[in-house]
Image (cartoon, rainbow, N blue to C red; front, side, top):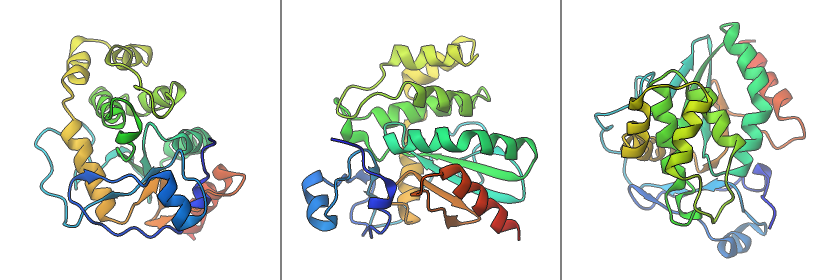
Length: 241
């Protein structure tokens, strides 16, 4: 089965039903509701109440609300909601990275990453999305969140498989220049797994029902066209006008 495009699900209206539980829509249910396959997108993490308090342990660079990681400062806010098992997220990250990097270097954007775990049930055993996002948060403590994120997408495993094992998650840190034993301990201990759950719950409470979701100045960017980077740049430029 081929991954669906974000366009196929962008009109999906999500009703929050259960607190702190991942709810993944089955292919059969989605076909019934939307008439299209939704394989490869992170979907429907739902809560019927507001998320609880943020965990005490959060990574370096966390935003004031503790629901994201700030990797640059600038006048235009960009929010990126990505799941490391989501194929569409990999495509989006690769498409936007060059333009986003230039904007960050010019001090044009405040980038806030929200590493969510909407696809935990699409790995076997379940939980890869959370494990990968927790490892990325460990990398943030070493100021390597973005290169580590790129490395995770470079080696993105297929859905329904086990995902990258812990040894490989640790090795990816070395690949992007992280040294010392503290990163390995952080990854192996799953230090930031509770934080990933919190980030995911907050995202759902704010109406983010699928990944990838990219917002510029609070407005979701439609990335369903053939040139995602162009659509993103246009949204940033319009937000400044």
